[in-house]
Image 1 (cartoon, rainbow, N blue to C red):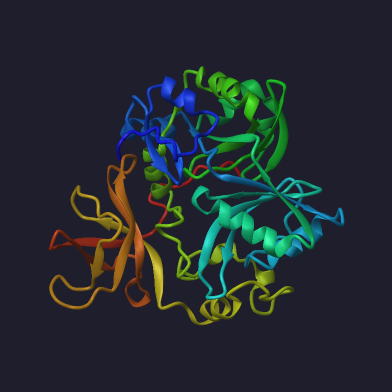
Image 2 (image 1 turned 45 degrees about the vertical axis):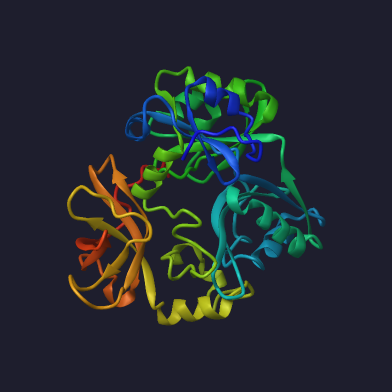
Length: 381
């Protein structure tokens, strides 16, 4: 993609910093975003695994759901009507992965939900945020004030040195565990911090007032262990970690069960649970939980050095036969030093170790169904 400063692209508050630091900018989800810096994608990926990488994720949507009753349980129950996830049990100061499902049982977006005591804080994907906000306003406004946050940046600091680097500025973050959330003073600014991220590494996501975002980001990257990281390495990091990218691995036709996200749907929302169903697409999703889906998201390890990219069709035989699946994400994994992919295959061909063939430029190449993550996560639990 060509470098662009097109007037039709939105900019994050850190745009000038990216350019000052030599970023290559590309259009992404309607924003002018850094795809890589001077280190390059491979070294940015490896640096994040070895030390710490800082990502600008300010293009994502930040939303507050404040219950009109004053009781956060009412906001949790209201949001449960849109997601197959148990939020009533989510304790104050904790965060949970969730999914907006549609009436057909497909996924309209994946998101994070945090219980902040008197409100819920929701983070949604950039490409879906306008639709997600409209969806919440249309369905939750009787119970909650739905407020998009437009005056805060969002950064992610990821990697084994993330705790030390952020604790220099805010010692309290060292005590946080994976999926904890808290308001933390960083250089005099009230920042909303979660110990989470999308790289498979220990780290944090930090919501910062816009007028302090560049100053705090520059203070972090002044640490010799911290480098700015672009979208290119963010993609290979999340794929090594076996994490889905909405629009590639998840979409409105794909159910959470097909996506192998059963772990995200707690017992309370399943058949026989305290709040069984009651979310869009419940009939299909509960049936697939009981009977199994016809296809499943799986990890894939191609032989050789060439990645199999999204769209590659998968076959059970080296010659002949109809496709039994499709690759949805593929890249070279710098940490595992080999190509990796994920995709959907017929459940009958989804067992770990199953040998399949991906058709690349008219030639069928061998690929093996593999467990994910391809590299073990290092979250601090």
